[in-house]
Image 1 (cartoon, rainbow, N blue to C red):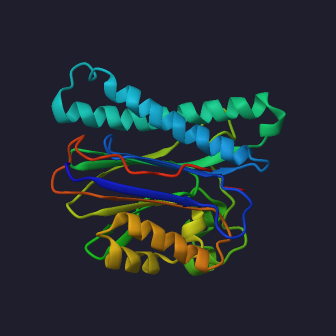
Image 2 (tube, rainbow, N blue to C red):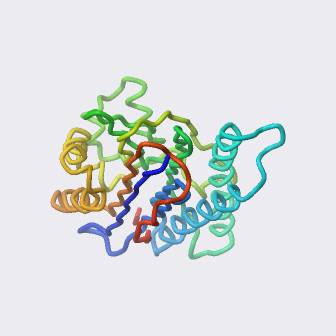
Image 3 (cartoon, one colour):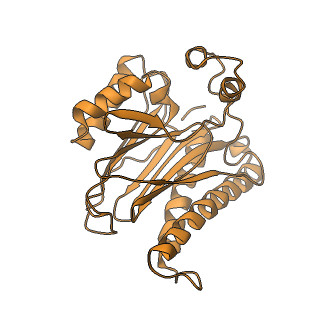
Length: 274
C-alpha cells in the first residue's frame, strides 16, 4: 500500500515517576510495535525496550530472507509476515525470561506487546497481554485484539459486564505476558485493510481512562492529522488524571499498500511501571 502513514507518542502520565512503555514506528517496513513493561525498579522499562527492539530487528531480518520454497509474489510476502510475527514475539519472550532469571534486579520483569504489520491489502496483528489494537473504519471503532487479562475472562464468561470491567480494581491483572514463562503463545490474526482505515495501538494507560466512543470521536474529528491526534489522545488521558504511562500509535492506510515511499515517523521510545 503506498500512502501508509504512521505516528507514535509515549508519555509517562501524571502519576508515574518513569515510563515503562516502549514503541517503534517504521512505516517503511509497514511495522508498528508497542509494549507495556512491568516489574518495578526500571525492570519494566528494560523488558518493554527489549521486546520492541527484538521484534523490530527480527522483522528487518525476516524481510531480507528469500521467500519460502514454493511461494512467490504476494502469497510469499504474507507467509513471511505471519511467520515473522510469531517468531519475533517468541524470541522476545525468551530473551526477557532469560534476563529476568540471570539478573536479580530484573527478577519478575515482563511486558505486554502488540505488533501490527501491513502488507498488500492485509494487516497482521499479534499480541500478548492487554495492550490493544483498534480499527476505525467509516466512523465505527472496533477492538481487534482481546485482552489477556483476568477481567476479560470474567467478561467472556458473562460474570461481569464491560461497564463493570472498566471500573474494576483488578482490570490490569494480565493472564499472559512476555518473560513470565519460558514459552508464550501470541494471538495472531490477519485482517483485510481498506483505504482510509485508521489503526490504533495503545497501552492501557489510554483505554483505562478514555472510552471507545471517545476514542472514535477523536479519530473522526482529527484522523487526517495523525501526529496531532496522538497528542490529543495523550493529552486527554492526562486530563483524566494520567494514572499510568500512555502510549499511542496511529496508522492510516492509503490507496495502495507497497513497501517504501514513506519517511519514518519520529517515535519516542521509552518504557510502564506496573
